[in-house]
Image (cartoon, rainbow, N blue to C red; front, side, top):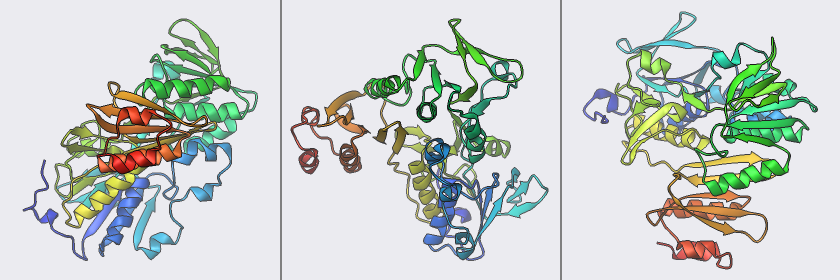
Length: 420
């Protein structure tokens, strides 16, 4: 795929250009915002399938679920921001199909919107339990949208029993919230440790130990064979025959990029909507940003689900629509709050990376990932200073000596100033 610089779609859009953005999440909103910031004067329509204006998703499984954050504070922009920036916000609207020949999107209510450029920021959806296991029982929840959390909140009762299927970040965040509310919590994870696909053994071990110390029970290396109950879930039978009782089940088994609309329109799909390094799909008039986009980069294809990626890729697409022609250079960062642990992650690690542990003066610590001698990622566990310095080093492509990183006596600030 290339940018097709000789194609009229690659030219800077004029004042009459119509841009339609499908998906009113972080990536869709950021694309609209950056288009205006970069001087785009044409029309922008932002289409969201949910009835709510664009909102923050990370607090959903944390502060909002606990009732510590009001609904209005989730909003990414004030209500009058859209009118002030001449952005038409279409909520509760589902795009049924894309007519690439006529360059328009067809809405489920029969309406149509013409576009000169189309941005797909359709995000990802929560992976659901197979019907053979869920059997239509009440009391089973996924975690992705505001509506999901609004449904789950009243089900989390103080003396209740929660079963979390999946030991990833979302599952563990929900487990921490539920234990804080006084619930009995069991976590079932098919791998031999939680966070197996997304964190090192050192980070996973520390997180697991924290959860166990707070009363969370783990069933590792096991899966759910069936959920028990007549109309409402009452428990689960695990793959080893163990019976776990539960009043509520949360399926935290990952997300899937929302690609159906793109695939039905004949666009290339490859673990997401396939885009080149500039964010353009194989249709020169259609772009992709956020969780749904899979970028072609020098090291291979990359798709990420994070706020940082949503913002950065939206910024990239907006600039490239305006003619910048800049390739994506991702700067991954993530975070997760569990009990009193703030886990902050910069970079992308792999299971075969060498991990250097730096113990802080207190309970905090950081894990530094090296690949062929190059620093590639940093995990900060209640170690915000380590995380910030590591993030800065990664941005500089600098690699401090691993032995010095592991020495808690040596100041990281000094290492940052001397690293190459």
